[in-house]
Image (cartoon, rainbow, N blue to C red; front, side):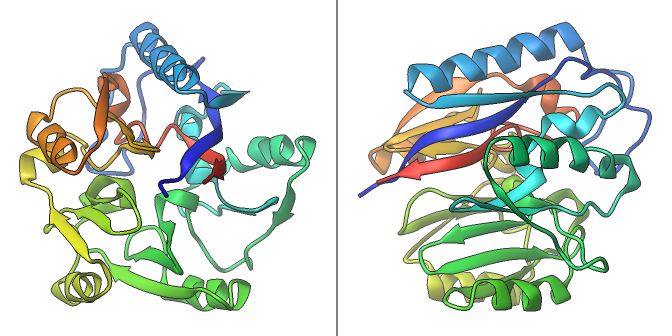
Length: 271
């Protein structure tokens, strides 16, 4: 049975404007329209509400433009939250505000050892009885050893990225259901792709155009996929698998390397 999203955490983009730093290949400085970004975000929130999803909101803090990407902040497991530790100093100031939100909403916080870095759902994903971890640009191998101890009943699977553009999973990796994962052939080294093909029954490549259109930066709930506007070939692939699509324009957030999945931290699912 396909899981349905019950509750998410999102960050209202009150100060999402031009960046004065570049920490990924997708980022563009001096080009973001903050009013348009807020409208796009509000549209995504309404889509979720129309789908019956409860949207929890934390307000963005001035001077922390990337704070809007809530999925990067943590890994949720039950009523516990493993807080992220960001590698780049430009993002490290976000963590205390999310930690306070989690504490105030009854979550038990788990901290990484000081020397380890990872960026929440941006760099790892639970799938069936496995935890996929993207290794290379934001997360290192020692994190996997820690995660294996934290989750002894789950196999931690390392996927090694091979290009800076795929610093996060949701640029070139989209698990649709317990049988199907979409991926970009440009994202992972051949050994990791071979490993995935042996694990995933239905392993579907994204075209370069679909990848650059942020097709992988989608959210699936039940038999509905919320995806970036455009990408008609991706929409056709989803339809052939029995899924309907809702298109949302998040072009302003793409200028920072973010999209639908980046803006959405799933707090609770139900079968």
